[in-house]
Amino acid sequence: MVVKRILHRAALGGEWVIDNVLFRGRPERPVLDAYRGYATPEGLVLRARVMAALRRTTPEPEQSRWRNLREMASLFLTREAAGVAVVAPQSGGVRAESDDEGYVTLRLPGRFAPGWQQVALEIDGDPESRVPAHALVPGPEARFGVVSDIDDTMMQTGAYSLARNLWTTFTGSYRTRRVFPDAVRLMDHLAAHGRNPVFYVSSSPWNLHAFLEQVFDRAGLVAGPMFLRDYGIGRDQFITRGHGSHKSDAIDRILGANPGLPFVLIGDTGQKDAAIYRDACRRHPGRVRAVILREPRPGAPVTARAAMEEMEAMGVIVLHGADFAAVDRSLEASGLDP
Image (tube, rainbow, N blue to C red; front, side, top):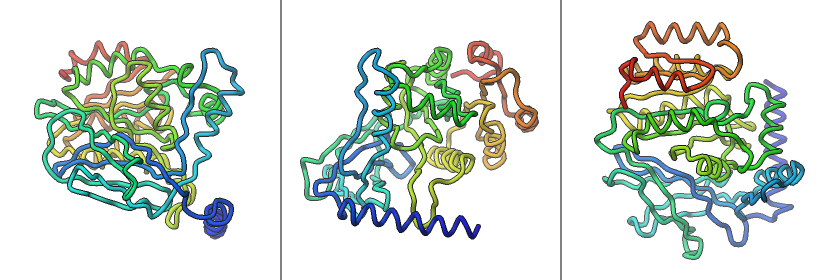
């Protein structure tokens, strides 16, 4: 712990030198990168990040892995701006300031129509920085919500192997990344033409938000707000919080934002999702109707099987298998009708 504290302080000092000496403080003309937001009983939660410039990948068909690597690496070479006021000028002038990593969250009070709502955000005093921010509002006809993992659940990644995960992430492009066809069909079924809201939770960093949107759009995967991970260095954080902690916090936030809605949790057995979802069932008794797990390797680990048995003992429907095709066929028999 002492070594970690020393490294944390050294990292904070190094980041200060980079931001204030090499980059000489705040960017002269910062820009906004808006993320998909969500609704709560009180209103909309809009999320964005203030940076010196936006970075996007624009891969050509059949381009080399080396070029993919350079483009993907560029997504992480960001320069953030802290203490920048962001406003929603057409929504009563709601405003908030970006934190040390450039993140900003605006909360718009009120009642909004179901579906995707669009709200303009801009940096205070700079109308040319305006960008559209979107937030999903579930409708009263929703029968349940869906929370899904991304890596090795929706998209082939190899997240259970760090080396394979890094190779897949940095040497591919949104044109080459593979979304499982059975995942697309399952999510279409569960979303029921937009009636049931879908949310995605991943340990991928926020730097990949736009990239993941491209991957999902190209595959035809149901759109939903994403809850990604901050890999920055802050006074109360060194690099990042744990995988389980991040996913658990996101699930709690989503269920808290939709207090009257039961949920289906989707994941895989390669990254402790079974245990994380079991703990969520304990924290939110009666709120989780079903858990669906992909098994990326032959058979589920012993710990995952034990967690699945515990969830079944709580009355939660648990469906699992090597792919989602059989799971999709079992949904109607299980009584989980979208």
